[in-house]
Image 1 (cartoon, rainbow, N blue to C red):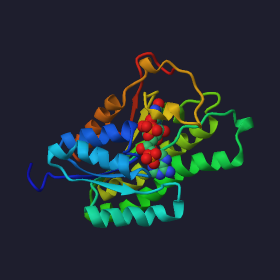
Image 2: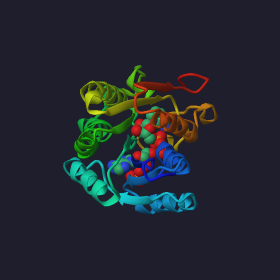
Image 3: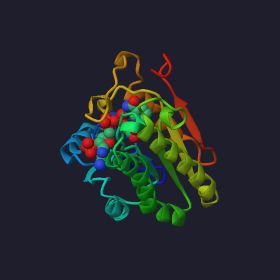
Length: 241
Ligand code: NDP
């Protein structure tokens, strides 16, 4: 691949699930990857797994819940790794509880990570994309951001907010050469379903795989620059589980 075609991506939440699968798919496609999450050992294992592809892969330990530091940490990564062509805002948490039983601290935690940290990641990377007049930003939202499900209130609100953030940003940035894509998956079989904040008993064999979602993300970033997928909903054939 020529130097002109070489692209660099920053992927948040790249230590597992959709983010990890996206890192592997990007590396296979020749895209350099800067990997972000709290678990640097897991990120290094992903770097190791793509070492044979010849792309540059580097791990960066960042807790995206520390909101006041996120913007400057993203800027520091871009300085260290090189200008970011593709930002994949994937890190997020699942959370289930009826709204009537959702403590304020839990609500805040979900909104902080799933919505506000994405805003801050974008603010860290967008100024250079604007200066360069090019860039692709992918936000991983959810079908729950478009459709209400009982017991998923705080999560749905965070993802609906992210949908609107994506739409607004797309309108504001298209004249600056920057394109924004919201990827809205239905249920994906990842560790999210094993976390202590998620209580749901769905048939995991019917879910999408992270690799399927990663292929859609790769497709969105591989389109010619004059084209953009504004929003892509990808569901298990079985529908909303
Ligand atoms: P995983 O639990 O497998 O991955 C979540 C990722 O987010 C991990 O890499 C984790 O890394 C990272 N992360 C969590 N908290 C933080 C934090 N404070 N700072 C930095 N990184 C953090 O889940 P998925 O792959 O399923 O989820 C990825 C995205 O996809 C999420 O935004 C989720 O809402 C969305 N999604 C998932 C669906 C599903 O059914 N699984 C459906 C629709 C959307 P670490 O723990 O190392 O920090």
